[in-house]
Length: 281
Ligand code: DHB
Ligand code: FE
Image 1 (cartoon, rainbow, N blue to C red):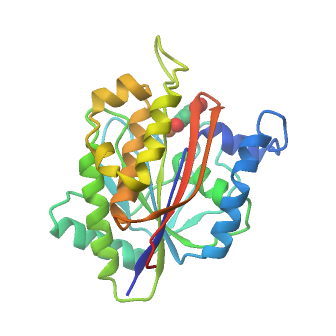
Image 2: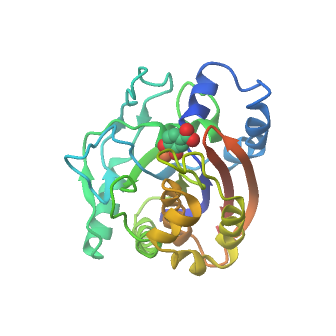
């Protein structure tokens, strides 16, 4: 049987990917941030999952305002790297796990989540930057990746509660897959940031710290935060944090925080990162 052993959250700031690709990780601006991910890279090497379910948002790379799926599951056997305007990032192609992905599609859709099945999709910084932060620069990614996209680009996004409940359905799906696979769920994006308009550059460290504090022990408080509260308290792009709640819903209630990192700023964003482990995994 497949099982979820841990969850990872991290911001996905595109400038982090550019800093890696252009070898700027040891520059004064970036070094403290990359140092903060060194323990996580070690944890990732030791944890060695077979599959990562990577919850992220597409930034109008694979989708556009013509088609806006609320939840889209990547069922392909490979996912090319998107060209976001400067050519694709020089990172390995992402290899999927179609059998598990189709099983998750069946299980969650029959559990009444309206998932869009995607058989062809390029993946952008929302997916590749978290992989780079946790895995460094390998020739091949060390695990299969199933992309799960959440619409947080065009109002209305799904609620945090819906995302949390999707995490629970995801767990049920994984635990009913008849193959011994060790699975880690990534919830990416956030933390507080606003890229546009009068409050561009807005960051709220108090909000972020309360969010991080609640992740392990009382996520039910986070699930009640609505879209207007995210907008007001975490800036217009702070809504990406609902994707962390898919990960949290997929883990045990008593999951343990094993690592946390927070740094302001990374580009325009408060960069937050956490690792939670299932105690009985
Ligand atoms: C930035 C952050 C994001 O999450 C994103 O998708 C694009 C840009 C930034 O901080 O620059
Ligand atoms: Fe983003």
